[in-house]
Length: 101
Image (cartoon, rainbow, N blue to C red; front, side):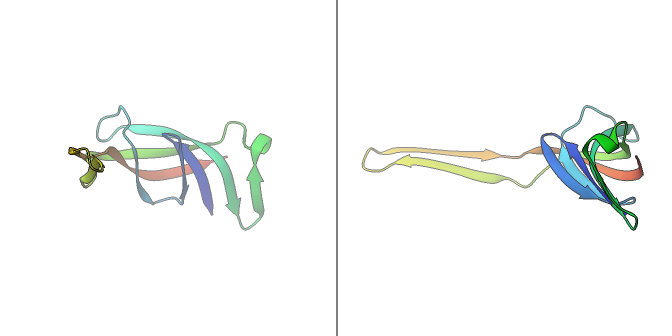
């Protein structure tokens, strides 16, 4: 069985026991969070939309972190304008405990 959950404007395909990195959540390590379920698929078939009212995936927060640095380099040709920036996106690592729907 797998489910499609939404968090931080993105969608993730998960199963019970999976560990995923989502956009940063305001939660401490060990807290339980609930994610919206958009679709559930199992051996009986798939459920989408109105059939999933009240469906929720429960996950445990494993940690907070920052992704690898990316370099953003902008310049204007023939104008001697250059700008170099670095960025590290914060994330929350969660483990899916259950999918109910």
